[in-house]
Length: 486
Image (cartoon, rainbow, N blue to C red; front, side, top):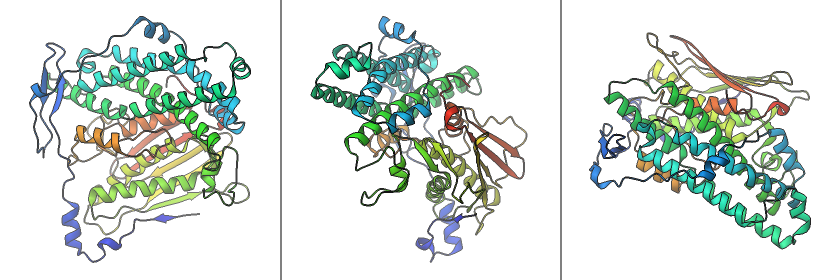
């Protein structure tokens, strides 16, 4: 079965071809404020040159130097404890037997687990080279993690959650007390999620300043040491966001049963919800319609493509797959927000590469081909093939390195404006996080990390002069267990 998808084109139907091409070639560049770096040698702020197209400058002396909060002994002791790997299967079972009692047990688990995970991230940040950890963004990032750790510990010390057996709290306290504790912890988790929704922007900003500093000293690419840190830190950060997002979603399902459902596999009349919303267990869809998710990611990528090129219409997407027994579309247990992120990144890159390789003056482009398959042995396999010319020859290409980007040089990044946009933008992701669209160089790296977190993988092969083939593999439900390392 195949589907072809395009964006609505009525808006530009009356424009001439020349007008469309002229508009398409306008560079997309945000006003970029001067970037600041706290020198590791003299702690003075020095301004990195702003990107081309800057319409505003700032003097380094006007930017206050942030102060990194010290690491106390309790943080170090907590970080010495082992973290408990997440299991998607167990997360699904928790939601399918959802009750105030089961949610209270999960709350007690989070009360023990989250401080461990946050303390480990704090120590990871502290082990970075001075040139990186002394940038303003990384000092802010470190202070945010320290603040969250302190909030979690303060709540734990002042609550009744430090019990040996969850049943002890359930049977020995009044129901009103239990509900009050759950509501208070829900507020704490929501505040935590909001505080850390800028993490990716802070990291990308700090790495860009560090890269500038390295280049000024005659260095080259971001070192393997930094690459390893970013993989480890982002892996831990994502695990935290899944734990928090899943608990908040389950609590919302329990308190507002008509807004979502934790156990239905078919749509119910009168709820105003789609079948996908009714199927979801927290942030997990045990029977996710993969083709429908591909279509959603395609539409998101087409929208971004359309915005970037203004009037050049994106390549169409052709989907083919083998039907499951009974003629159904392929269904597979996934965290839809994570798979959507992966697909969106791959499709966005494929569309841009195809258009730029064949020329923006083209009226149409070769289709991007997507193949879907699933089995108990191999799990879910999604293959995305484009005709975008592949990676350039003559130099080493490491597409999964952080700061590697396929975005054109006309894309400039204004980090202060992006931070403000992330802060004020309504949350749409199940993990309560907004990620940059392009140009940060985090897209492919985080996409592979997302795929590998629960045992899957993402690989990309390139045929120079032809195109690339990206393959996403996700493991069956019982094998989706959090990996602490690649």
